[in-house]
Length: 569
Image (cartoon, rainbow, N blue to C red):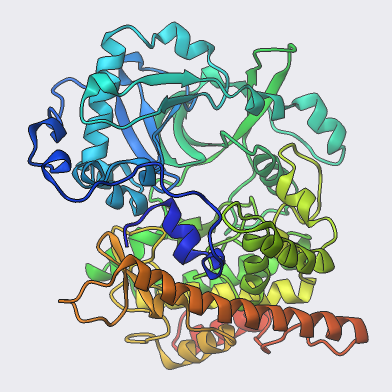
């Protein structure tokens, strides 16, 4: 089954348990014939050669290969105004063109280096080149655009002249922005850093959807901003401005970044600047360092202790929970220490999350789906309503309103003790990655591919010391076998796991397998939620349901192991 946005609803998400109410694909594929054959000259792209003097650069992509970080290098130096290029859903692109443009690869590949050779990247650069030469996008126009403006490609075609690009201003994003005065009114207890106009920053590159590398004052900085749903940015900003400092938590923002809005005379705070750690995320560093013998057991123990200490610090000194623990959100300093980043509190994919979180999140994913019937959605919405009466406000409100638990519905349903148990679970998964020197706990994840794909999966151990194995196993009590034991990403398709490689599973077989698995998983989750609600009501519920260790116990166990092998942490 080909990777696309429809594969998410029909296989990867719990919505796969129910019949889809979405109409058939807008692209009706004809049977294989000369008319749609890639050998037919009319279906061939003019050229995918690298341009000699490109006017644009693609710094990566997101949104399953439909949003590209397009940079007009001919305007350099330029401010980080983030005018991304959006293309149609892959499901709306003819099959022969999907193959030529490597769209299935773009679905799970993110970084600039790894998508540079893809057909879609080279094709988009040619489209932008032609569009710019025609005078459709000037530096003056760029400087005046509203925050979050998009370049939209409505139709992908083999012919450059048939692919019309247009500028789509997203005025609603600037309407969401709050002024510094408004933030001061909302957060009277907060001390704010100084402000900078966005045009004082020089764009360098896009690291992530919400993370840009910029230059200011002769130094490199991280500019954190979101081009939609700005409430998450404000929530993270408050978290970072109020959490007591810790050496293994990203330091306080050094500047707020503002931009005059195009209407109302408002100057909105659209992001903030953070210290830049040039080594980057440990996700790609750990397997590379291990391969070249650049790390030792002492490093792994130190990093594990630092993470446990940082999580315990959050729990003991603030009301901030941390639902985003995975290697992507841990960076390495020049001194060789780890630092936790990303405090939006949106959460992680189900492969990283604790089963308690997943059970509730499955309800949310079904209740908010646009792909299934209102009747099925209502059932799970009612279950969520019993857990968190205002859950719909968290999901639907696009403007910022101060809330202690942020906008994460599953974690907001949990008690503080339950949240700690879930943090311990995620920490256990991360510790496994550290000691096993793997980029993730799961091979061939559907959502994303890695520069260094995992060689083996959790909970298989090949090099972790026994005391740490025992700790990881205790931290991850309650772990379940996921959908990945039935359906996996093989290269750029979803296939049934364990099937003879000479036999290709059909899309219907994949969907049928996913439907059966999700029906059972939803039933188990619903029954667990019922038991929890009854137990909380009568006072018999064990809030550490799987009897995992506390964060303090995890930290102390790591410290004891360090002492045992003669290390100081």
